[in-house]
Image 1: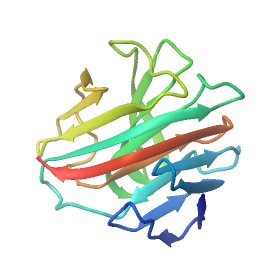
Image 2: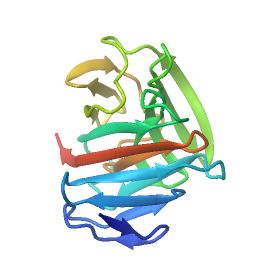
Image 3: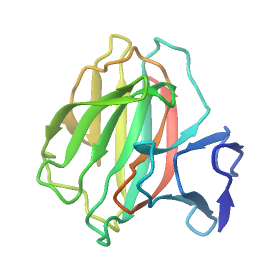
Image 4: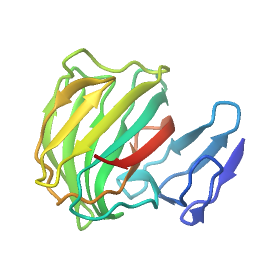
Amino acid sequence: MTKLFLGSNTRPNSFSAVLRIVGCVSVTKSEATNSYEVNAVHDNPPVFCGVLPEKELNAGEPYTMTVELMNVIGSGRVNYGHPAVMYNVIDQNNFDFVFFRLHNRNCYQLGYVLNGNVFTTVTASCPNGNPSGGVWFTLRVEVSSDGSVNIYLNNDLMTSPTAHFNAKGRGGVLVLNGYENIIQFRKIHLNRH
């Protein structure tokens, strides 16, 4: 396992782009599973621990972001946690997001961060149930140039919100700080439609 430096740019082997890591205790690469473990086990600001590949597509163009996520533990339980993704990322203080609450019947929350302030716009149940901790699940976010978004959980349409920010082909992984949460991610891709 290789520990990555926090708050700095790091070039991991499996990504073609540099990773920017903000607000995390640690991010560790596992060569065996070709995945990254993200540790957000602290109560200090910022609200989110974020891992952002610096790959970026042209603003205004439609794009798709896919990633596989797994909740390892949160608040001492495998089925408690807040794995998330950010999309339309302008910078670490301005982006749209979707995060999951494995422990709650309202399984996901949508929102955005504007100038560092978090705004939640939707809280709802997942159509086919919550993701389980300790199991990989796939999240796909399709963003159109008009701001319409389709979010898929394991290839099933979960919701179709309107983004707060204009289409900007940049995204990454988030974990909500303050819940002793550790997640893993792998196979993150950003592509034009």
